[in-house]
Image 1 (tube, helix red, strand yellow):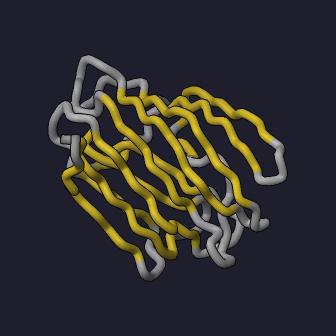
Image 2 (cartoon, one colour; image 1 turned 30 degrees about the vertical axis):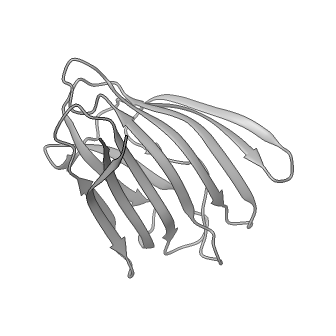
Length: 169
């Protein structure tokens, strides 16, 4: 098993959103986010799947995630029928290393007979700054052919970060 880089975008100055496409077959794909930060403090990184290169805003985003803090506290969050999903379900900030860093595996994206599933695993610093890890899943409950991802920051912009899509080969 190996990885084939399909697409990558590195942000070095504020932008309102990032679209990363390249899913074009029934392979498993891996999305890697590195040092994604907002322009304003205490914001969420939002995800929408793209269909035909455009963000899908249908009410088809479900999620379940578990959080663990270095303080020892832990909790779970879940939701259904959203028009997007906060990919780590926690706020990030503008301080040193207050970023999103994660690996997200994507299944069935190009299959129009199945929902698109994404497993989530990330290690992040929130706006406090406190280290937290998330594990969980996201499902796009539509049988559309998903070809990528659309990212935005709630009431802000994306200041920096690297977004990379790989095909598992």
